[in-house]
Image 1 (cartoon, one colour):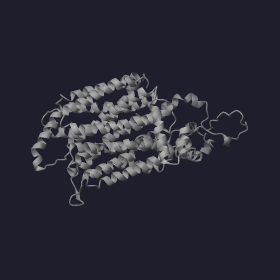
Image 2 (cartoon, one colour):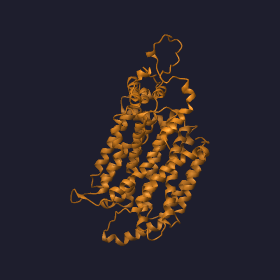
Image 3 (cartoon, rainbow, N blue to C red):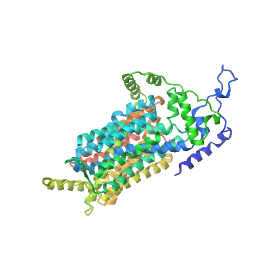
Image 4 (tube, rainbow, N blue to C red):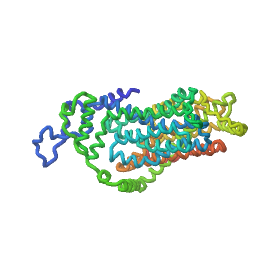
Length: 538
């Protein structure tokens, strides 16, 4: 699928509109009654999106798309990448299953704690500064974590990483979208989402390369620097590259205008024009941008003198989300989002661990729970010999790569079926098939069948996250949409935390019951999705 072809097709659909306008001339805003008609050309203001149309789709938009994709990759790497690190580090930290669950959830806890605050900061200090500084801080904490020999400190640093990258997990979409005209925005955001699937494949691919090395450096008598620590650096690398590129990119002109910084906004658009065409805005007869009207909330936030004022206003603005008439639909979306993340991320963090155990028992066909039970028996028989095995099998790497590629393919398939089936039916079908696959995991012995069903059980709810986010936007009033999506995704992160720790605490003792709870939860999400008033909208 070619993004340039998609953009060209959409542009051709607007050919009639474009032929009626000379692309080298400004769009003249109608003169307001009472204003003199003899205004000069330099006094005419231009709407921001009209200027983007004049400049055209070019180098800036491509670079912003690539950079945004790297930021999204970094978020997935830092969170889901722990699924492999928990296996490779279990001997160094002597972790139990419960401790692995906490380690995997640490970054999600950090994201949960700071997401809502980051959402407000991005509207007061800007998108680009927040993305640069928080991502850099996240990279620093991530780099520091590779040198700690203590489990508790390592978990705390992973929490700080999550707290820092919370902004990148959703501000990236706002920054990306504001460099495109409205008709191109859904297309490019969909392509940015493909980087999420690419990241899920990137993590095991790099891990396979790094963890296949057999070396260690003794830092102290009790601290060995081993390959899994280097893997953390590779997981953070896309974010570091994105920050370097962002230093050369302008701030979003849209947010600058909303902050009343008209001069800075004009300079940012001028930079876009130079990067795309090599010409300045003056060459296009554009001398000023039309000022945006600030809402009362924006004015209060921009003039707030203390953090307490901002925090107070934040929670006051969140309260209308829980009032009629939209509260019922909003709460349903939040519950579904929590359930989806609980399965996709919570259970997904344990996917490499489970497949690794299956790989070690590849010679004997067993169900997932039979393999887990056999590992418990093996641990009980060898507990006195203090044997620790942190080997990751080739099967685990291959299965994790398959999972990532399937996730990417899932986004492509979703794009084709959404329009004919509609969002509600698509989600219900995805949840229904996922629940059936989860049920089959109780009985399957064939390794290939287990991989196929396990992957479908995890990715089908996962690809519905974007669909559900779109439903939230449609089901709440315009002035609450940003906060609604933020709160909904926060509850989703809470689901990831719950899921990871539930699996860690109960999988070994109550394997069949744990899988039963998860696929019943998927069925419950399907039932709740049927209550949402979202028709056959693409």
